[in-house]
Image: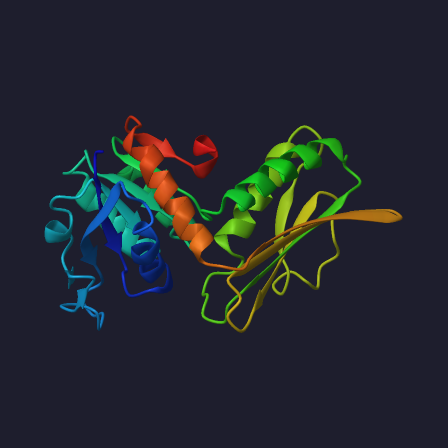
Length: 259
């Protein structure tokens, strides 16, 4: 059995810790390298027998796939380093990019083997496909709202997953209605326009991630929800993505390509 050597970015974070633990359930994976930002308290510490490194150059030695759940700037720096190591694949679940950072991400990814997903859960990706299909069938009279709830430490709002769901709905409605994203709390004092897709974000406690999509019609409504109760589902998804990505040609992929 061929062993895939993994590098983990942000090993002291929630996802980093989970990835290191869950990777042990995959017999074909071996975590060989760990990296964190230079000001992190984890630098120099030994986690599972591996020293946490501050520099990307040493981190990328002897790895096949990097799994990254960090910050937009950290991911962009990683992509720039990978331009000299095109055989190393990247699975990234980083969210919170602004438009300029998205443009840089797409540019830096050219010629590399990258899978980018705002949510690594298989269930969420099924929900996105269902919402795309449903929004293409339900007609132009539906008012659509997306509500997401996350733990109190999450910074970006709405979540990257909520935005991905919104884009799936917009894709489904493409031939029915022009759609516009409206962010409640910023635009809440404006009247709903036909075609609006509204977003509401709630932050509190230790909630891993809840997403609900509401399709409001006169006299009835449909609600579709996904609730993550264990962060392990994201780690399993990321590791399965790493398995899949290793076999692919260079390109920018999504979890939808895999499932």
